Amino acid sequence: MERYYPRLAILCSLISSHSMAAALDQSGQSLLPFLEVGHYFEASLNAADPEVSGHTLGTRPDLVNSGVDDYSTNNVSQNFQYYSAALKLQLTPELSFGILYDQPFGSDLQYPLKNNGSFSDPSVSQQGTQINVDSQNLSLVLGYQPFKNFNFYAGPAFQTIKGHVSLRGLVYEEFNGYNAIFKEDAAIGWLAGFAYQLPEKALKTALTYHSKIDHKINVTENILGTALLLTDENKTKISTPQSVNLDFQTGLTVSTLFYSRIRWVNWKDFVIRPTQFSALSKQSTTTMSGGAYSGGFNLDDYQKDQWSATVGVIKKWTPQWSSAFDIGWDSGTGNPASIFNPTKGYYGVGLALQHNPQSNYFISGEVKYFWLGDVTVQDGTYNLPLPGVSEASKVGEFNDNHAIGYGLKIGYHF
Image (tube, rainbow, N blue to C red; front, side, top):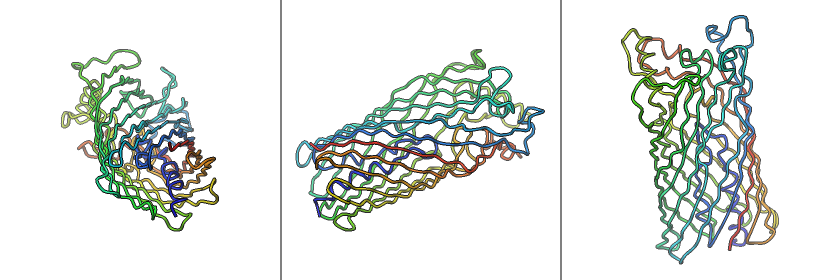
């Protein structure tokens, strides 16, 4: 049995990619490379080609320029790619050490310039709403194997994050023209977990916790280039969310492996509210409510935590070739959803192929197709404690969208 199982297991960490996961979740933060046998190195590239389009609500003519009958947004999601790499060293039979690099959170949305003026500004700035988020994560992991089948691991995670946001269009009313540049910030979190393995049965299960990481970011805010200075400058706190991964695999036959993965991400507690935006939103809600509410609202947040699951089968055809097929599901983060995340999760199917020129190294490729969930999008005022606000905050519909994801990985045991 052991002749095939170790090679089969490598495919699990490729085909469970999270290129179209909910909110800003991107890499899936897998620890599977750290659980490979012996010394191991891998590097991977993932890319996605999404088609995400919608239209302004027909019940909201106030959000469309007069004389225009085209309410559509066209495709708002840009093609993107991200990278990961891992080095695992088995220092002694009881101790292992790993360095893992990934880009856990990211977004790249750009609403095209449209004459309807709903999510873009054709008259002044001639720009559409944009959001770009980029993060990098470097984790140092120390593993301890007190018994043959158990592995306990933990370590620090060093993370950087940066981004920019531009709000354009009638949906934002007085916030049309708002820009925020989030300068790169670095902070430290941690991870911990344990794994149980029976190599002779290709059985492996691992539970991994990633802590939230608190960033305090310098944000430059303006309205169409004019500095926004409504209150004292303070750094903006953004906490990337805590998460839990549960990975499982087991051999079905000498050449067939079943695997699954469940992931939870705590997006419900995620909030972006820059200092000057907060002050402007407080002014807006005070005016809107006639003084009844002055608490303002967030630039971005999510209603629910994200859950995702993947199940699949890997088949070894020859000593050099194996393939995998999986199905996946992502819950999304609520409906209605943010304009910055105009989908509600997905259903997906994936196919991967792996070639082992020699027993100690391989190259794998993958393609996945995603059916993205239909959703109503809303502005940031949806949760204000005012009558009628929740319904009035709904500004668009995004339906019948999809994406294609690609992955390429090389791995080497030494």
